[in-house]
Image (tube, rainbow, N blue to C red):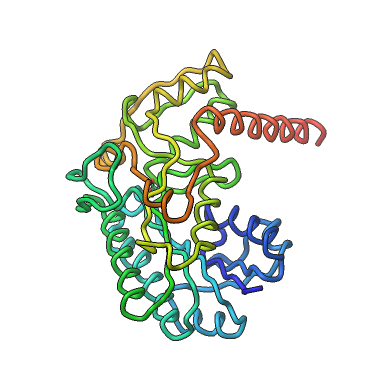
Length: 325
Ligand code: AKB
């Protein structure tokens, strides 16, 4: 079995992907790494962990060579809203870490997964059923790093033969680790606030459509693409993948089917609204479906059923634990 390294294992995708891959490929074969000194107890206890600064290519080289790693899931990145607060840091971290790991890939020749995002599109991109190949002139610094990252991965593939693959993720919704600092984070927070308080104040306008995906599908996309035959891939990296597209109002209406007293109101944050307005309403993912059999399992209805069930049970358990303390 190939050894797998997850870079950024403590993040929103990394946490669940590490757990999934350890179950699938064996705990010892999946090494979690992060710049943080320690991760959630479950991850620390279920398999190996290495503290690593992905900006430091010497350190990355040493870990990958010593552990004989053959596959890397590269998930270190700062999300769009935080990027906008400090564009210089956004460039340094998002590009610096990717550049450092790609350089090591050139020497040690491992296979890589590097995600891009709907953030790689911009105001001049056609908004509905956005094509795989289309205008990419993003207006946010996050988007600039995403397009530059896509191109850099293409370059390493074409010039050095590195098998680097990736998808353009929509906003990702998870019930395990909350996202940090994205434009699409409202779509997660809304479930927490609906269950706890029966109300939510949204920072995007009610009719702002965005592409979204439930975490089990996000993991499925990464793993299915990594397992696909190399020759069936036309694009290698930056495949559009979609599963659902909705606005805050539509999501709130779906939540009301479970919590009829739920109320949503709106207090628009101009920075995140402007980023959301520049992103697609929905992506055409036919290339991913044709080349490697992409097919999501969840839509808004099934995701909402699951989110409300899982979170309600968790909050009830916590309340009970508090009472018995
Ligand atoms: C963000 O909102 O920044 C991310 C993304 C869509 O890439 N969730």
